[in-house]
Image (tube, rainbow, N blue to C red; front, side, top):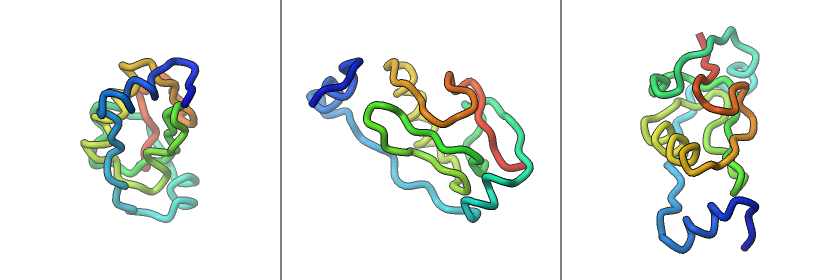
Length: 103
């Protein structure tokens, strides 16, 4: 399996490639996407309803989508991916310093 950064291969070989559980759906995705939103610090976002999709690439599997609750496991996983140099597709702030949530 090939990925530009080699991150996926390292994770698969080391056995550390574990996606968090699917977050609870708290709102219809369309309603969350179109709702009034605010940007909050990503590290402080647990418990809020996400208003954007975040897909680490590689592997290209969405981790959180509009309407889903941002769990501590999602925050920890995405923080780990960010530190590993994985690109984030979808969020307004691709560096994940902030995240858009429903007001």
